[in-house]
Length: 448
Image 1 (cartoon, one colour):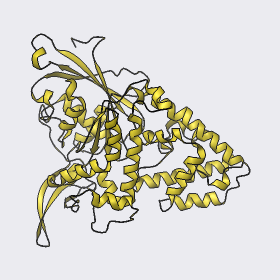
Image 2 (tube, helix red, strand yellow):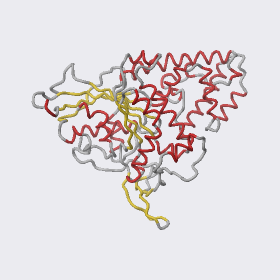
Image 3 (cartoon, one colour):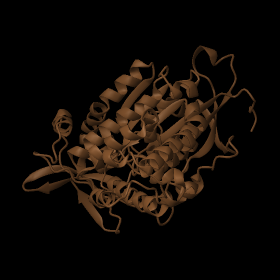
Image 4 (cartoon, rainbow, N blue to C red):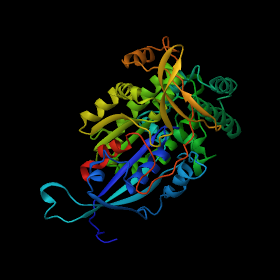
């Protein structure tokens, strides 16, 4: 392509979120809709023709796997549409945009090329940030204090009760780590957000290594040989696993999307909502320039300029409830957003659907008209669905969650798993979505 140069500007867009938030679908749909911009009316440069061309290029980082855009798009939009595989490791994709500048400079400045480097990484890894400022004793106590009542906790605690901590035995350590990892997997499946260490859930090449063979220990088990070795391995995990990730990938991010399955947390109940709120507040510590300690040194004065918090799966609600979902998301993130805004970063919250799977309709139930959605369930059946009414005041959810309520008193918020809907894309159109164009305008519109 003509116009490529060494000085072409680059935006590095980080995309993360916790499990089931839809990172893979978000990236695939965003790239497809930037290549074919017929559905991107709220992206000003797309709507007014300032983007003259878009194309995929070889990614610039030779040691980072390429995001498999073509395979994921085929899964979502092919003759037998299905959800693509989720994020398992860091990956990257470069999309180049040829742009004609607008305004007073348009007459004398020619077209320029902007490279959008999209970096996909698991949100579970980002949660490990909080570990860097904790020692083994502090981390162990926090995890054990919040573990009660979570799935798989009883099995792990029973394994701890039968442990001889006076000596270290690798087989016993592996059994403890297996029970703790099983607990983390079950907790994540039940809708909880705070599941650290994140690499226990996605070990990759580290599976079975000593760096992933430790667990939290109660106070009376920390003084023996087992406690000393687990504390050493906890330190190795921070220095050999967590820190390189932030140094090699996170420190170069310019713009960031944090995807959140807020509806899934609401469905799981007040403890899951509070868990998500705290997890997001902790994640935002990573975006604070000038923060004392190791992260500030890693970032070297750089900062993330814009951060979007996006509640996904908005297509599971009729549009009349979207403002309420957005308001709940914004309120849940108030502490996190205040931290980022204070640092100078621009933030926004919105509700989106990266791939729209439903249509809207009104259903009649008990003599009342209810705003519903209709879609194809994962088993192939068609269903109309009304999930319940989200409260107009977010405090009706957040206050009980913060006060330790175990269930909602005045609401039953249901969710369904919809499959991608079969559709034939018209020439020039990307996959159908909800507010993906607004998300793109916030994240990169100022540079187009």
